Structures are given as C-alpha cells and as structure tokens.
Length: 386
Image: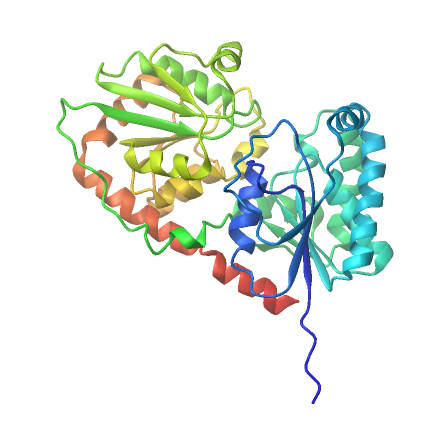
C-alpha cells in the first residue's frame, strides 16, 4: 500500500523567536497551529530583545553570524544580501520543501533571497506582506534599490501573495493588478479559550492605569505618542501611565516621549500579557502627521492581537482613513478617537476608564474580533493549499 507523502512547508522570515519583534509574533501565532511538516529559515538581529520562553513554531535554521561580522555585514548590506542568498539556497536545497511561505518586511533581504532561491530550485513561492515594502525604505539606500528591482517581479511571478489587511490588499491590487488573498494578523490560538473576561470595575477615586506596549516607530506612531505625552497633563492625578517598550528611558527622552508620570519598562511576552489584563485602558496609537501615511492607512499593529484578548478596553487613536480606525469603528472593538487633539484624547481616555457599559461592549466585541483571527483557520487553509 502506497502511503501519500506529506507535503513539507518552509517558512522564511527576517528573524524568529526567541527574538521579539512584530514579524516573529505574527509567524509564531500563525504556524503554531500548522499541522503539517514544517521547518523555518531565519536571520538574527542582535539589537532585538530576546525572551527565552518565546519559542519558534518549528525547527528553525538561523543565519547567526558572529556579532562583529554581523555589524560589518549590516554596514555593507549588499555583502549581507549575498551571504543570505547562499544560506537560503543551501538550506532549501537540503530541506527540499514543496512550498515556501516568506514574510516581507521593509528590510527585504530574506524575502528577496528566498524568492531567488525558489526560482532557481523550482519551488512554489508564497509571499506574506507584513508591511508595505518599497514605500517603507529610504530613497537611495540599498534596501530601496532592492525593492525597486524586485517588488514588481515578485508581485507578478509569485504563486501567491497574501496581504494582512483589506486596505493593504486594495493598495497592492491597484499597484500591480494581480489577485491577492488575505491572511490577517492572527492571535495566539492558545490564548483564545481562556480569553473571555469582563473588564474590571473601579471607583472614580481609585487609581487608573493607561498602558501602551510595543515598539516605537517614526513611520507609524512616534508623532501620535508625542500627542499622548501632551495629553497626560490633562489627566487626573490618580491616573498612572505605563509604557512597556524595548527603548530605555534615555532613548525615550531623546525621542521626545518622556513624561515624569510615565513608568517605563520592558518585560517578557507573558509578563506583558499579564500587565494588559491589569490595566484600565490600552492605548493604540497611529500618527496623524510626520509619518508614512500609506503605512498608517494599511497597517495593523501587532500589539493589537494581545490587546484584543486582554479583557481591557482599547482606545484607538489614529486617522479616520486608517485600517485601525475603520476596523475598530465597524466592529466596535475599540473606542476610536480620529481627531488629533490632546484635550479630546484625554476626555475620551477618562470616559473609557469609567463608563462601565462602554467598557463591557468594547471588551465583548474585541473578543469576537480575536475569534475572527483564529490562527487554526488560516493555518488549515495553508495546509490544504500545499
């Protein structure tokens, strides 16, 4: 009796756990639910925060250079790109996958190297656009030239390209006139069963905590956080503000996002999830000005996934035409402030921290949004495709 061969998938990403960045969380959430044979190839970023309890979803082959060589390679990205190409082709030749699922970040190096190797080895290539590519690179940089050369070719020749949001899909469809599908940001499937919770209630006089977690990006949210800093002076004295970010206090000062009332820290993934549950309001900002307008319109911040499952209401502070505002308004998983005004923002934060009915509605709808992002459904789709 002939037993059919199980098809093997390889995933490719700029890096994977234990390093904690947006793409590693997205890939781990999605592929922890994948039931077929799977391996991964990834780079290493010495500057990224690491969490020993944050594990990759499968056997992972890392291109991990000695630190001093990595620094040299990053100073000369064309050399690093050559090294990545050799590494990726060697690993794919050895693994012999039936398809490759590659994450695209603005860096573009692993994504492009994986496409080139797949073409050379005749392996189906599936791209997953974690961000806009060309639009998020600096003109005249190597990464910009790489995106200029390869984005159109990959868009036309990849077997499949998956987008993260409907606004991103519309943008790329108009740009390249090909069909795209959506695999959205998926929540951590293990958290779904235990996530149903009602928001905590407190007396108006009790202390309240407003929490922001995650990275700080000039292209996405720095200007919005500048507005938030100004807003803090309009909040009552019993309001505490916490920021759990990879930047230290000095770096935050240099970026203009320091306030004496803010408690700054960095914790593990699990500790961050506990902090979300203990807060009164979760702050989810995208910039109105001094940002990448296209990225703000099309992105879905990775931190939102844990926000949705926390049992704590979310305040969305972002432009009216951003995917964040559109999605939160339509599905009512967040209280949306789409005007760039610090006093209005402060008023709405106070209201969300105290309005019991509004808090309950948002938490209920947030859980429903999380259920729509169940990774098992999308992992099973990929398994059937292969």
